[in-house]
Length: 344
Image 1 (tube, one colour):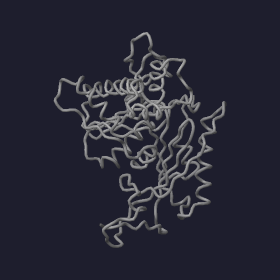
Image 2 (cartoon, one colour; image 1 turned 180 degrees about the vertical axis):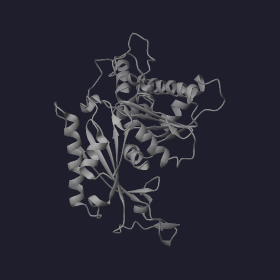
Image 3 (cartoon, one colour; image 1 turned 90 degrees about the horizontal axis):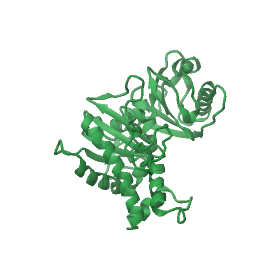
């Protein structure tokens, strides 16, 4: 098969994706795809095989920095920190990326976004509107293109562009990390909502038992209290009992025990994934997506996750004979940077 040469010429245009989280900020450097065959062979080089493509742009480099949060005016402080990190990269990179070659910067932000503006984000102490677009243009030039998306929506755009190659008109992404994120694309359009919170289905209450936990959003018994790494640990701790609980137990440990046929661990996993099947059932009745991708840290368990979810879906979806296609995401933690850059 043909292999591709990534040519870093003087005329290259570069794009930067920035995925902002409460713990870390991920940066991805992309360039326009120039596909030039350099020969054919039975095997492709490992380097080429690992090159992922977002729309017509190729990831050439990435790095991350710890998120630094201050109590006062963190909006201004955090953006300055991000800009400084980008400029430090420009000064020291080996790809010839210069300020005048950057034509677009996209931001994936952990909160509701309306008209390219982040409204608020609790986990990064973003309390008020702050003009990300104007601040970016002031630092990097008025002609630069700037886009801002909610991080879950950005990840959805990334998976739709790369993993699914835009083959489906409707798809959803559910990320099972510490929190649970969702993103929805219907008829090729990202659903964002009037105030930017459309798709936050993980904060629908589904647990009305006496054991229902309070969610970070303030509600009780949300999908997120039962799923994701935190929800899975909540369930396992309750089933295992306080005396046997060990704070070093994480979601991977529980899933590994479930795979090894540990009855309590499997029951915890089954209950947790059942809550995701309820979420998907709601998605099916409202949007009926063709494909549902599972991402986040728990997705590393692969088909063990989707197989259990699928069995629960068979018990819940009656209005249609067709279940959605369940897939594991491919971009993992890079989905956000791919998503914002795919639209630049």
